[in-house]
Image (cartoon, rainbow, N blue to C red; front, side):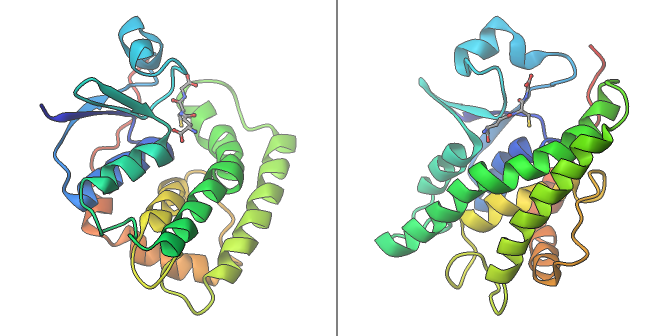
Length: 213
Ligand SMILES: N[C@@H](CCC(=O)N[C@@H](CS)C(=O)NCC(=O)O)C(=O)O
């Protein structure tokens, strides 16, 4: 039975799961979870993810939500690829994935909501106070990532890992969310490498605006 991946490709979290599946060549069935139509709130989807958020996967009877847990599970389908087998190298990847959840993603989310989501769903214009808060949080996080990427091609170790995919997914909204990246040349260099991956373009092609409810 093919693994089902419920995602809304415009969202960095949905994009992340699709990106890793595409990059690894893990066979999957794409199930659009259209946030504009409220697909995440249906009883059928709530049985998959009680949080009523995407992404989520179903692999037979196994259900999994949280984008970083999902990409970790996908990587186990191709051992030794994006998740190192060495304990310390794997812990390093995990560290950046947790940091993505606790620090990077929440800072991106504020700017994404104010500058992209509100427009898509007719929720009014950006709130300048929230935008300022988002920019401050984003710059704090970007400073950490930019310094870490000094002299490095990849976030963890010397090859692509889940850490790169987890963190780079936010860049799918770099332009529409106007992520303030100008002062972070190492993030720009690394981001250019990530956005040139064939899988990146494949998932970009799946993005389309939500259908009105
Ligand atoms: N930490 C979760 C966040 C998931 C999440 O917040 N998804 C949002 C979209 S980016 C969602 O589905 N929102 C639907 C809603 O709140 O109604 C993950 O990484 O999977």
